[in-house]
Amino acid sequence: MQGYKVYGAHLGPFKTPASGTDAPHMPPEFNVDQQNFLEQRQKGKTWTWSAIRPSVVGGFALGNPMNLAAVIAVYTSISKELGLPLRFPGKTGAYDKLLEMTDAGLLAHATVWTATDERCANQAFNINNGDLFRWSEM
Image (cartoon, rainbow, N blue to C red; front, side, top):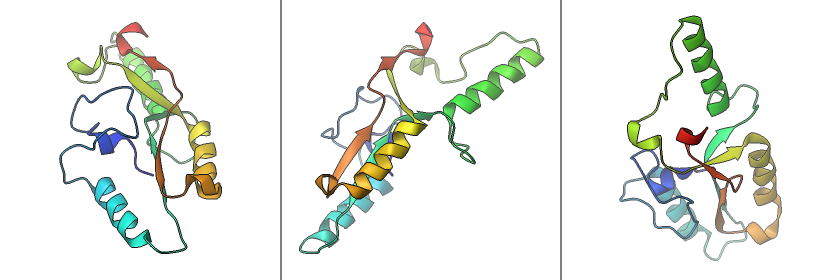
């Protein structure tokens, strides 16, 4: 499980929609280093590796605090309770940028698929819903 940090999502804007063939951001980046390590170790072996890269995850996942839907729900509830107008909590530049989402259920299915389907061997996959949106239009 890697995520879009491979493309530099944690550093700022990157090309969206992201593609598995996009170059990673300038190193160091743990996920890229780990994948390179696995690719080298796997050569000539009978085992395989697969990497999945979800975008921003939303949906119900028990015990998972990395869920944007839950964070937005708490943020809007606090704003309402304090009588504050709902404001975009992210960086100014992110308000008008295209964003991809990954439903937690889709991510669960993709995790099983990449782990059990031999066609997924030694590959990385971006996992997202396929739709794009901008916060400014929500």
